[in-house]
Length: 235
Length: 344
Image (cartoon, rainbow over all chains, first blue to last red; front, top):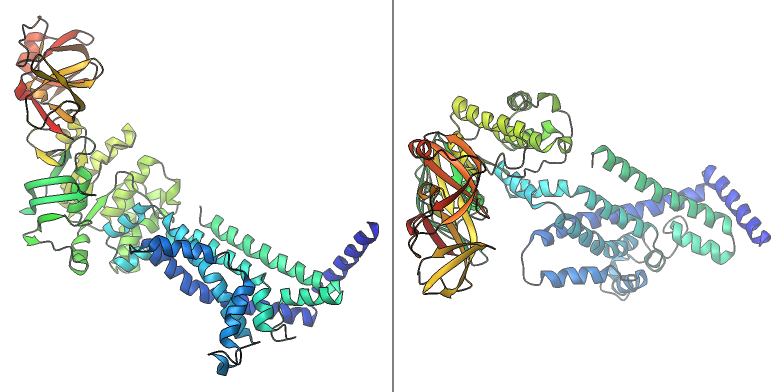
């Protein structure tokens, strides 16, 4: 027990030193992770937020079915998405000529597919919670359809912000898509999670723990930032 | 000048008719009260006048022009009219930004916007709250801010849904005074809803009464929901609540267990200390204790508790002859012509 504790502490201290010394390999891994996850989140937000808004406000046949489908997609395992995208972008796939396999673009596509349903479903929930009186107030103050929509989006901004942060948390910590579509190529598609898995396989825990610390710090930082913005806005 | 003309307007929610107005004209420049109990269709009518909802059928004219409710055509009209909600909601930003919203939409430049915001806040006495969060205001202050938000847009018509229903007495006085000033200083036409007849007569140049979605001839304050009882001795009776029953007329649409809206015209009720020799079906004597007596213009208003509060409006001569006192038990007498029954 003491041996295990001492091993963990040694790894932890070494990891802190590694993180503190801004090790170039560690920085590259963090940069790739952030770049891929941020871009996937931005693209997914650009699609998911308007889609969620349209579904929440729209009256169309099959609306309930669409929402049920979205909620089902939330439980989609990352390896299934990895496999699905792989079929399309592998050499024999219809997008094979684009040579996307084992690139950051492939990872972004996979992560995008993973979180679009999440952002859409959470946006629907956030917009549905916005008081109906905001729409009426905006309209009676002279707002047109777009301006009224912006008012509703603005009033649902914290729910939507939470949706985007949840989505970012989901992609920064996923491993299936990054491994299957990125290939864990050092300096190119190696992310924090795939690097941690590799280091674990090698039995080298220092870098794995250091990356774990960075991952936790990023997650904590995002949530603190969100709470600060929320607090400053007086809600 | 006639501002609004409504012809054969019907509004439905889920196949239920909530508003059914054959003809109504609203003149520009005055203060108009829409009086009626809850569910009478007052808010629905305001939404129509604010061009927020198209009617199910009928024609609405504004300044002589028919309103089509096509988005592009109705938007300019909506920018001339502002509706202040009964429970106004503020955008989650500062007091000043709330007022600026409508001005920004109208593309008014920043310096002019700042000036208008200051003026509007000064008018409603909230100048010092300009940079405060709108959510921090009390209920009465929120209502005043909602008025300022509307006023800043210099609307031709200000529609207020129960502007004083959910505020304290101090804010009620401020709001009523504000509405008078807005009408007098700016010539803004004001239409407000209320279920308080006293406020309607005190503030409005004209009072319109609504009951069950229709325009009513008199402002029936004594409006109750009752149940028609099974026939006894060849006469129908209606129970307003346990122990309070009145005779119901033999109308084709009134059958036992029907839920009805009963209205008793307060002008057609007389008070009496003497045992009435009422013959069933013609007069409906019930007794109660006088809770309140107050002067109201040419009339004296009395509220009598007969199990439900009943308002009686007497002329001053009749009151002088009877001299009823608070706490005294009196009999109420009214003929069938004082009653109206409408199945719900």
